[in-house]
Amino acid sequence: MTSDDTATPQNSDSPFRDGRTARDEAPQFVLPLVVRIERAAPPARTDALETAARAVLVILADERSLGDGEWAAAMRDWQDARIRKVVRRARGAEWRRAEALDGITVTGGSAEVRVFPPVPLDGWPKDLARLQVSGTDLDDPEPPSAPDPAAPVLWLNPDLDMTAGKAMAQAGHGAQLAWWELSDTQRKEWREAGFPLSVRVADRSRWEPLTTAGLPVVRDAGFTEIAPGSCTVVAEGAREGGLLSDLGRR
Image 1 (cartoon, rainbow, N blue to C red):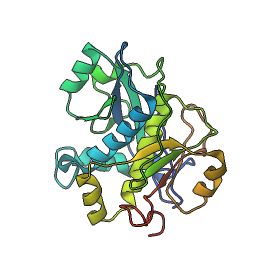
Image 2 (spheres, helix red, strand yellow):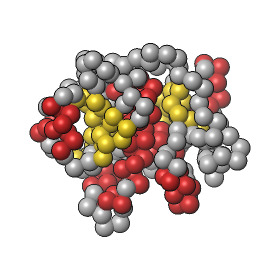
Image 3 (cartoon, helix red, strand yellow):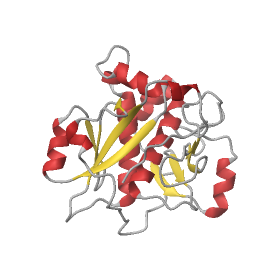
């Protein structure tokens, strides 16, 4: 399962664009994410997507990613170029080797995702480079419940058939766009709350209104699975009075 791709809000200087920009001339980095998928106990798909989205937020907010932190230079280089995310899978000894590398493990209800500081596109650590990027998809044993009305929702395009890995990376893109919309105070509140969020497939009747409501929209660069420029995720804030009630209107 893989996503080596980017996305776009509407501004022309965004690192998330499907067309070529000056950012393509910069050295390219990728944010690695590894999802734990044990053969006998794979995580639920929606939980894996939500955990991956939170993992992206956790590393963005980590002290090591800010200021003079040990990951800060890599995080800046990554965000100055394309915003690439690649999801790989691991189990057993593979997962234990991944856990030994510098990174952060984020746990959901049934999912575990480890996120690592960005690495050069062609410079993956050996224990991550050997991990599989395809061959396993995930399912929800039961239909997901209604999203929490007091937390952000990352809405997936109902007309796109994405693997779990692709969808995890896209959810991560959506979470990152939402993070960029916030003030420092709002980021602190979201972080202290544990980054509550939901990832759901939008109803077809709601998808077009969501994409035209001025909210952050992920547009895929088309490196894997889907056509360039496809809208994959819309990041919607919480309902009136919630944490991100002004998302898309600031």
